[in-house]
Image (cartoon, rainbow, N blue to C red; front, side, top):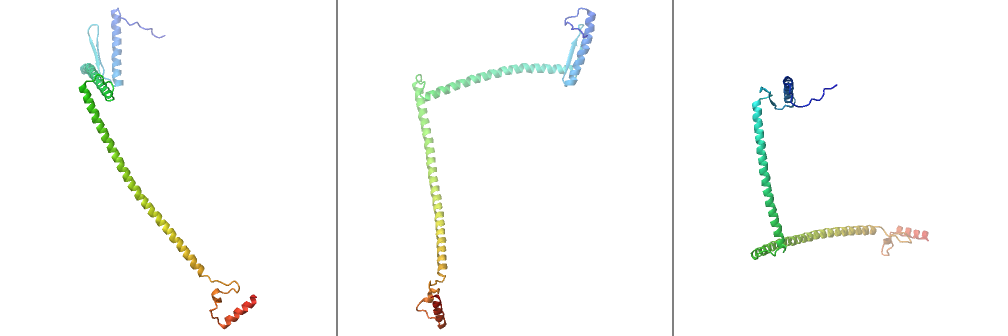
Length: 232
């Protein structure tokens, strides 16, 4: 069976209290040592007995650890004050930004002609002048963009005209080349046709030989007559 749960309260018996203190003190020092070794932690343990006897453990130095503790607690308190100061600063900055946003919104509404009933005459004159100046700037910018657009369109028109002329010249060259090739083909066909001898359909003799003014040798005349008789 396991050990029963011990009630945590002051031990009235002096002897039992002293024995328990010795056991628990030894266990506590052992746990502090294990914690410093296993976790590489800086540990400082200080224990005073009921009789005022000091027991301590430190893996480095008790005094150095205590000084480090003092600095850490001091920095923590200072950090708290710094956080409070930063919070106050951010709060004030936020309020200032809200006022600026509110003023800008009112100014925009006034420029749109809204909420001007409570504006004084002097402020109305300033508002009017600011609107006039704004209109001048808007018109100047508009004219600048318009002139730039017109200049671009004119330059583009010139480029298109140049491209059109180049294209027209290319098309004209292509047409002239095709016509020249066609004329060459026509001339070549005509010359080849004229070089072929023409024959008479009756005597199958060349037409130029049937010319009355042509003089034939005697044997050629007889051959022609003979051929004519055979054909008849």
